[in-house]
Length: 90
Image (tube, rainbow, N blue to C red):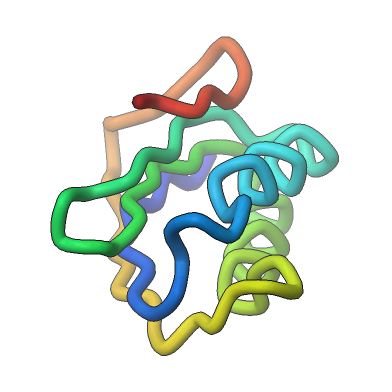
């Protein structure tokens, strides 16, 4: 099990980034959450099998068509496993 916490920078709010992230997580069987941050970034926590989380990260770095991801700062969070699906937090 791999759990990653990350911050996505760029044009990532107002472009369906959170819904895109939830769709990517659901398709890969990744649990966790995503939310907008007041500074214009998007924050997420993703937990699942190592291959699934790595594939999820690849999708997050790409983002939906209207976005422009400038960078993703992420770190592993051992012991911070998420379960029960993937939610968009407000």
